[in-house]
Image 1 (tube, rainbow, N blue to C red):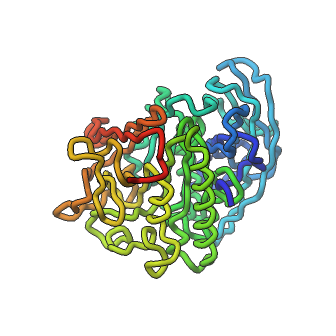
Image 2 (image 1 turned 120 degrees about the vertical axis):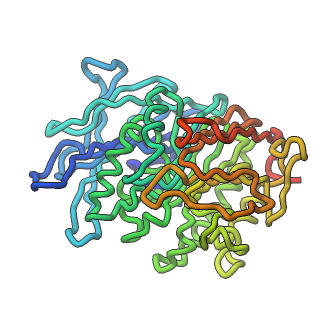
Image 3 (image 1 turned 90 degrees about the vertical axis):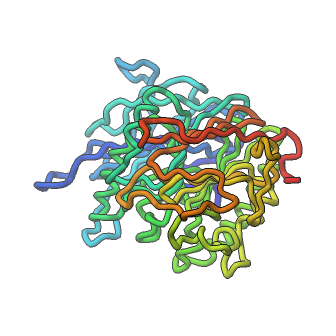
Length: 450
């Protein structure tokens, strides 16, 4: 399996960003006739290819209530005619709720995009069009400095960080978004109408930037069917696990949930583990070109929150594997020199010291994140949802560097092959930067932690 989701038949020779646009009609109140106008346009971004020199592409995903053609019109001018068009496919999605609501998920891939150029587009068909959206095609190759917004656990109710994220996006602050699991709370609720409402809420962000995802525990109903249908990640695993390249980084998204919902198949744990190992081996062969390896998964290996979640246990399933010994990820990620591990699930922000097997492995006392001797973990799940914030234990653990119990999100700037800048934005403090750290690793010998 490679790169999640349904971006219209992605082949390994393309670079692909998915644009997930969502336009959503409110379906509450008096019944309305089915609509052919796009309901949700969402732009999930993912590069489906590891070939940096190829022209870029972007996949647009949207929803209608009736089966109509799938078309995107696009161009370079904000107003006036949109001279280019691309056609794609739609597939029916039947929600697992009692009403068995049927939606139609459309996917169209735009190809031959000029790197770094801004495009205007609308999606739909002659039966109805979305409003116009804008996105900037991703630059190609490793020699540029991507900026990302990173967060998890964003709900349709109490989405505290979303207004600021929308403003940041409209100001052009980011090249992509990483949503590290848990959407809407929950996308399947009210016969998937909560999913519709959530997609409408994130549309100003998701229709403008590659919106990259991984599954969380709140996506579990009906075997993650809403998650698989609504987002278009690269590869052929319906967004469960995939990787993509962005500037000097190789980014791997995976499912921690395979370790917990075993009734959907224990074989998924093994399949994902072997895919991860193969992907990490290839990424290390390409490390001279893309030195950074960054992972994103929903449930952390470590945390110091005051609850009984997996990460509070010494032998956490994600860290140590099934029964404490099968397919654990900490040894695998350490072996292949993963630099940065992004997590969510806990509704708070926590930065760990460089760590392996509960040992703090700082580069030095003065500069702990310069040439660290173990991976750096960031837990960023405080974007806001109905479950509010998660408290911490009274005393931090020795491996915990900073804990912030405030709503917010993370900014990640991959400056070059050796320097990454991590900042935490507090929404409670009107956008104040409450964490600011640089991770510095050498260009050579990245696979081995010494």
